Image (cartoon, rainbow, N blue to C red; front, side, top):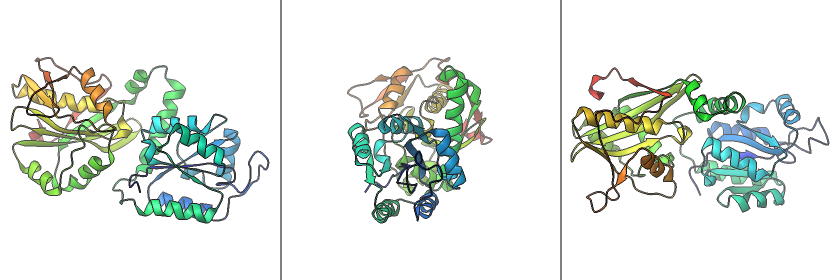
Length: 348
């Protein structure tokens, strides 16, 4: 089983509802559904809806039934369900294999799987079988240290505002007033660092794992810098969402860089790379190295390195290795991000 189930996508008619909404505006919930929704919510797994219905009517009924707060970023329209699920995956930055889709219609399940073969699907007609399947998946999950439900509610608000009020994504990002606060990691941050290593795939430089003892040694060592990024904007906080590990043993090397996938496309990885660049310049280094290792999911990081001007160095001690030649004015920081320096002066 996949231990990184992040999102359950519900159909409405004959799945959550005991009937078809367009045929009966007072349709009730299926017996036992609310208990299942609550169990999933307690596991901090995001729940959303993909349904072919009138959006206003459906949301109104969910509100009347007192279950609307379980769902984030619902896609209720007349589009193919694969298109709506694509919208959820793309905008909330899930991998297809992190998603479970529940529907009573075999046609809809097949239509989604033909587009996303890695999306888990399960028929919702038999409530007992569906619940058992969900419980097996939930049992495989590790406890989450952060309540992502609230974080995704903020992200839903960001997405809705971007769609309604801004012509370009850059204009939206400039309006967000994003701040990245960087500080040195301490022992009490190790659990969060390991969680980011485990859960983050797209913006993970090399998917290298570290034991608790490895991280403790690096935190204490003068040969490494283990830095955390706490990100917030005008909507609220992303909490600690980035890790930058610098290796000073053989030049100036970015050993590991991770940014939560919720921040994909928002420039935070650029900001952390820029922070490393500025430290390297202060240390009078002429070049900064990055240890990138390709994984099935981290191609966005390769694109980022190339866009920032990094070049691949062949036949080196690193496998693979990228580098950037530095000038005193080298900058990678996006216009819409402000770096907030920690009160811990050792970071600088």
